[in-house]
Image 1 (tube, rainbow, N blue to C red):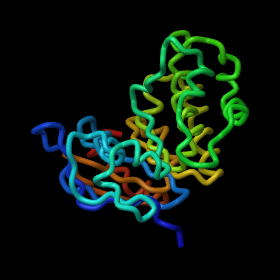
Image 2 (image 1 turned 120 degrees about the vertical axis):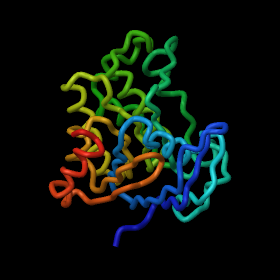
Image 3 (image 1 turned 120 degrees about the horizontal axis):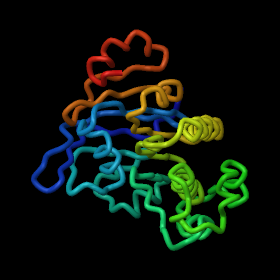
Image 4 (image 1 turned 90 degrees about the vertical axis):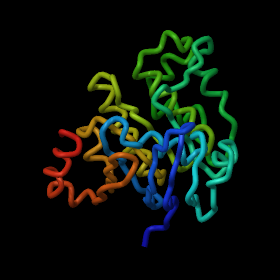
Length: 234
């Protein structure tokens, strides 16, 4: 049986007075790719941010490798082997691509070397000396993911990594996810691009109004298309 890596139970989260998550329950097993689906405002990004401690307040249970993390600050959550790639990417514009790569701290053993990164992302090797401002949107996205892989994180939280990118770059990101899965990484995706996410995920959770309203596996995808049409318009 697959080993459980992440378990969320009755998770509530707030930004100030705004109550965003209302009792979210989900699990992620080691080596899985799990996708959170839903319309904008459904609570998917807030779920990711709550896992790493970046919401205003939260209550419930978030267990990572069996360890309760609900009260931990973000830097201690990271040291449980969690890497978060936010939608805004956060590339340092004045630093070169390679300098950006060298910034993250090591949080666990086994992080990829720069050589490993360049093998996976040849574009970044070509642009190693280019400042962040000169990188294309796709190159910035690759760099944002690559920085996490340098840290040793094995649970990757990837928020809208395909948004606004050319189809050829989206295809490269899909290949990246398949490669990382083959290497044993565990990935949680928030994606608006259903065509990108659909063939990659082992399991899907559908969110609406800060709650999980449906979950299903890859083999059940075809049978859930009518429901997805209703919730997502796909």
